[in-house]
Image 1 (cartoon, rainbow, N blue to C red):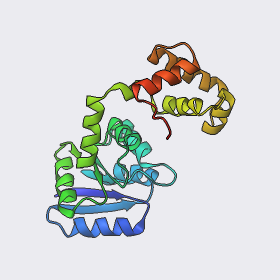
Image 2: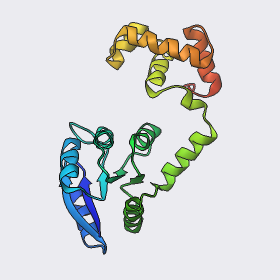
Image 3: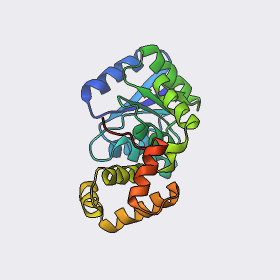
Image 4: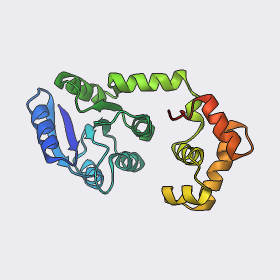
Length: 209
């Protein structure tokens, strides 16, 4: 029997998933959580085998919850179940310790297979997510810059000053300068203009039409 904990901030989604898994052979739904903090509390108390984790939740989000569960040494496998398959969601979740990543519109049988595979400790990826990861492996250049560095670079390319970029990103101007120095080093350039030019050349930035 695979013991499940379901985490999603939408009651209708939680009810649907609970009903689906409770009616499937070999599953037991131990509980439901509406935010990341509740997931962490219930996971420690109920010791589920698999946690179905949404990423976008109020308060502590799914990614923070995955990170906290790993820090606490909770042994449950985390299967991310979300509507988002972008790089900015997929990679951080997997790096934080998620066993798998499926989309909410996946067929019922795929969700059931995914939960069973996660319980066995196997990696589970929806086809679109697997394709994204393969593209990352095949074209590693975009990994040169972190997500925050890309945000800074995009703002610089759009003509923002350091102060304007800092205000838009809610960080200090000194932090922007630090990110720029890191960008220069990674791209092998010495100034803002060269960084933007090199980023376009490498395909990190796409010209606006």
